[in-house]
Length: 111
Image (cartoon, rainbow, N blue to C red; front, side, top):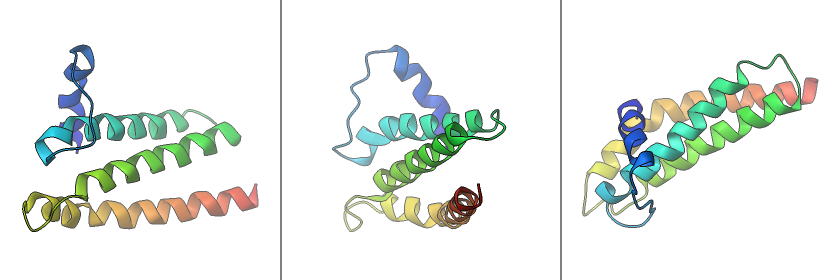
């Protein structure tokens, strides 16, 4: 996903039509933008010591990454096997992000 994030940056400058409908090749750059936004939110949250803004950035970043995985893997699996490959390769991310979400929510209750 990191390569897609880097590849989508020039499309921000050009007049790329962002769309979440169509085939895998049509939506991959839009998914990259959503993923890049989530990663930037998570990295930005590292620079805050504590507080509600840090938690909002962490939760928003995780949600943006989960949304990008959803759009990356939601397609016609019988027609195009790339959706299945994307799903199976995203399982480690899903497991680790659920663990991170649990830790974030546990810290919300403590603070």
